[in-house]
Image (cartoon, rainbow, N blue to C red):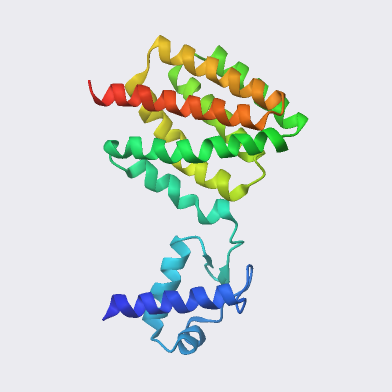
Amino acid sequence: MGAPLTDAAIQKLREMIISGRYPSGARLPPEAELAAELGLSRNTAREAVRALSSARVLDVRRGDGTYVTSLRPELLLEGIAFAVEVMHEESGLELLEVRRILEPAATALAAANITPVALSDLQKTLETMQQSSSDLEEFVRHDAEFHAQIAAASNNQTLASMLNGVSSHAFRARVWQGIIDTEAIARTIFEHHRIMDALNNRDAELARAAALAHVATTEEFMRRMLTK
């Protein structure tokens, strides 16, 4: 009986938030009042609040109360990165397939929206990445940063959050640990330069194609690794 009641409480709370009864930043009533409003027990209301707090919909502040969060996509989609990090290795290709859908779209949007300052920062990241090619940990870190900067430049925070989740630093490190070789590093740097050139030229379609080719290369290396 407990789980269905908790699910019902979660659904009711979600509807209250979506309807605007408790908008972003609003403080929920004390537990007893909330339970009465939901028509359920205090224990059930507490479980519902705990579940929505884990999902970053609610923020429980000890000694202060429970508040609706900002509900920003980067907050609500935070769990994607954690899920990716605990997935089994065999899910890696599926994640790359998702990335193959999202990354070209984000890169094309970045070509249209990226600012001169962001372009300059991206160029610096690429240069630093190239200089750190002999240090795998640093190389992976700057690789992740390069793609995160492009995602941010898309000006679509939901898309950027989803993309950053499915291509987290930890997942990149796992992939690179399996495929690391001189050819992979050189090819990755070359493809990053192609993406950079397309962004500099504000060519959305070329940027899309360069990003697609880059993710396809990663898939190729990973398939090769899995068949060894």
